[in-house]
Length: 557
Image 1: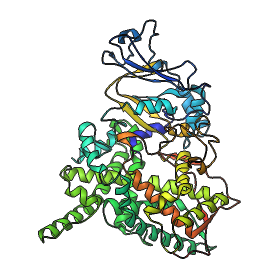
Image 2: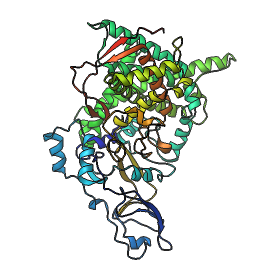
Image 3: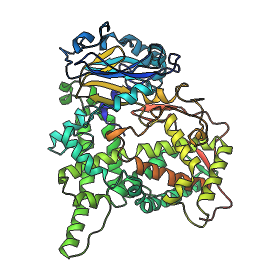
Image 4: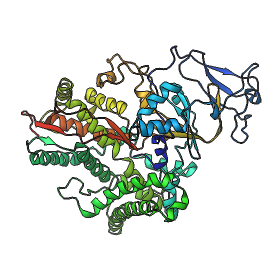
């Protein structure tokens, strides 16, 4: 799930991340040069190189009122041209944005404007909305050099409206709202028991319990359909599965998302998340003075209050259980929440804030990716059969697949990677380089510039991937013969700000998809229309995905 400030990247006046299919021809030739003594180190590119080199201004550089410093001012080599600044970048006007947004129908397809604007302006363009000025990057080489120089405490963007709720209720910040050294301490504590593959694998038992209940849920949905084999609105069923899965990990308890009748308190929690996100868009962009007049601010706060109330109740319940065992002299065992509560590195307030924020980040990746993957497998019977044979070979039919089986399923893993390439849950991300100036080619940007990383455009560029619009999981196999830039598809981000739950999400998706493919043959209605993606902050199917789930005759689970 993406925090609200990043929704800037989906609005028409920002168009902060959509680009073209072709870059300039020429080989990338990156070379490092040094300016005259006292000048900055520079990573440049040859005139016909692909994209632009990223340059980091030295300590001698300075910025005055946001204007870029000339090359001579930072000790550049003799003859160096004056550096350009943000205003010199090409980019769409407000009228052009409105034209595409309203007249061309890109209201919910702003991610596709990455492709259009990249074709118009190249791999680097500007966009503005209100006080926000954004530099859009749609080239993997430039993206790589940017994120590799972001410092110890990188910033995505300032989640002011999230902080506004925490400040109003006097609550501690979590990993998406905290910044600087305090963010680093919280993130370091949260990383443990999450990021290492061996640690993620320890949750496989609990995940498989949720997968088993999900399989039962699919059976109920099939039986309830007129044909006896149709699962309608698959994305909603997968959303419930993903919510139950992440809740089982962070709360160490089941909350009933897969029950035939969801408990009222759980349903209120789920509804509150949607309520909060819906109103956060209005709260982010409307002037502050409207908060006492329009209802969006109160609805937004109400949504967050319900989220924290639900999370705090379950955390306090677990804390009470731990304390009871300690009082009896019993040994305390547990998983993620128990670890956080026993850690001396987080206050109770930080535990509340961190767990609630982690919940929001743990649902959309799993649910949307699995939905798109099943959609494509249903439309490609030959590929689906190959995945079925691989899964059946790696995990005998007399037992369910476990974490140790996944390395023996390269094609299945390729299906997930290819799905995330074509449908990155977050089609854009953002970075703020707060510690230094940044130069990209002939442009210099001051500290605290907001860079929008256009993942959707990069991953669909034919210079990065052969047949970029085709679903080809084989491209991710070692012998697939299709090479690509390592930063041409990074759906979980990179570096210390990379997705905290990457390993857990991958494990959930692999275990769930392997079980589904082993039990069912997926079929797509041949009369059905193609399903497109829309950008409702996260990239989602444009309409309900309805698939036939035909039970395989050889199934023995």
